[in-house]
Image (cartoon, rainbow, N blue to C red):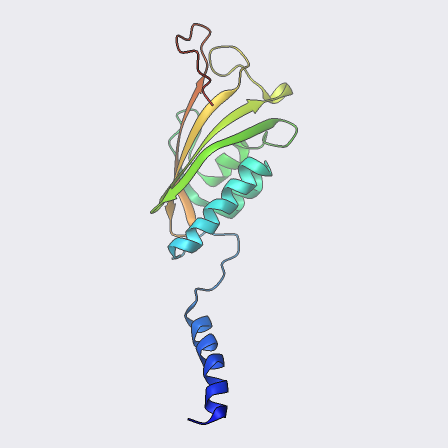
Length: 167
């Protein structure tokens, strides 16, 4: 075998490997498109970053929610535009999230978190008192796009029997 062939072989392998790698996706991720499991993991983490860390509900919705997004929370309407309106209060000044656990398996992801609202954004929604709330958000993806959402929220009751913290 010629030296030139040996020197060119690694370059050809690298080029061939790059050709089979999936293209890097960039937001917005909707309308939905087909993605690999590793791409979906990155998209899920970006969504969590935008909503729970950066606390930018509008950018989260614009980049990650389908226009015909299905909302299963009984106090909120379906649709991306309705969700943008519902998340308008989310900002670093109005809400603190502490992510306790999160995972993505197949096309479903969840985020278990503590939500603590501040100031005027802190309505006495549950039980009439302004307390931190433990929340589990569940999201179903359609390819690259969040298509459906469920959540469960609970505040610690005053008459709690269990002395353990909820978070």
